[in-house]
Image (tube, rainbow over all chains, first blue to last red; front, top):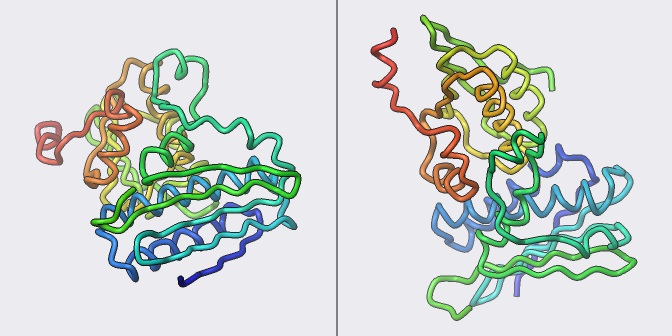
Length: 144
Length: 109
C-alpha cells in the first residue's frame, strides 16, 4: 500500500491544496478524467465539512487527509480535530434545489449528498478525538 | 477575495456574466454572488473558464436563482462542462438555470 499524507490548517483556502493533491493522486493511479473530477469534488466537500463543522474554522486545528492506494481501490481518510458530536448527525440523503428552500434562503447542504453519490462508498466514525470520513473509489474491474 | 471574478458584458436586455475564476468554491463564492444584485431580464452565467464547482459554489449560484425569480428574470448557464452538467442535474440546479448555447444569444446582439 502507498500513502500520501496532507495536513492543512482549518482555512478554506487550503482545501484547494488537498483538491490539487486529489487530482495528482487520481492521475497517478490512472482514474478516468470524469472519476478524477468526482474524486476532487467528494474530497473538497469532505475537507470543507471538516474545516467548518469539525474544527469550527479554528486555524490552529488541522485537517489530516490520507490517500491510501492499493491494488483494488483508492481510500481517502479525512480527519478533523473536533469533538465529533455535530458530525454524528451527518445526513448523506438526497438533497436537491427546491422552491421552498430557495424562498426560505436555505442554499446549502448539498455536500454530503454529493459525496455519497460520487464515491463508491463512504463512512463516518466519530469520537471525542475527532471525526474520520472515509471515501473509497474502486479501480475498474474490482468488486465493491 | 478582492480579485475580480466576473467580467460583465451587456447588450439590450441581456447581461452575460463571464466567470473568470477557475474555482467556484468557498473562496470565490462571495465575490461571485455579489454580482447577483445587478441582473438583467436575461442573465447568462458563462462557465467557460470554470474548472471546478463545489457545494459552496452552488450556494453562491443559487443567489442568482433567487434574485432572478424575485425579479421575474430569466437565468441561463453557458459553456458548462459535462461534469458540471452532471452535478447540476444531480442537485436539480438545471431546472432553475437551464443551459443556453452561445449561438442562441446572437439574436439579442
